[in-house]
Image (cartoon, rainbow, N blue to C red):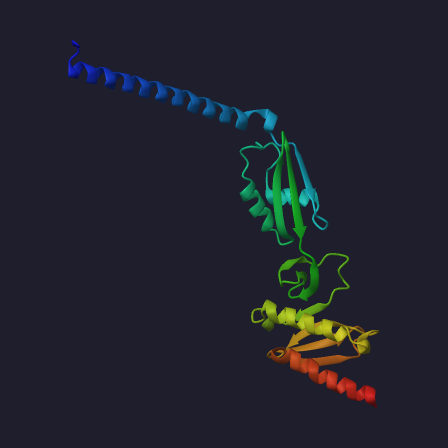
Length: 232
């Protein structure tokens, strides 16, 4: 017959449970401390300070311009740096369409970006470059003088949407695909009057004025006139 009382047995079980719990908490604390200390070491050691930054896909923007836009990168910790925020910042540049970044251990970052492609020039207070989505990229740069030009009058700048600008450019492109304009293509679209656009040819010898609300209909009417002239 056992001499142990029920109370002593319960106390012994409780003591063992508490001892096991205490040992587990202690072990968890040690592991947590080691992880914390290890992380602090990784984000403070010079071994992971960014020294090498490479770029791929940039043709208009040079490396210095991109770094200036991003802000301080060299010397930052490779592990602690926020790549999402950095990628978002780069994507906000007018010339950048998409951007991605990856870490190259132990001290490198690699940027890959896709630049927007100039589609036309837009004359406001000065001449700007615009892509095919209507985004303004920058003031005109050398080498883009061959792009079609849209001229906005001061009174028209605020009331014209990107859609209207792009529709004008597309209509100009439709005209220039015709053999009639092979040697004298339309190069300038000037927005004049309420919702009207005036297309000018390269040598200024041919002009077409159309309603911006009925560009497709105007193009069809021009084709009818052109066909009748060719029949003669």
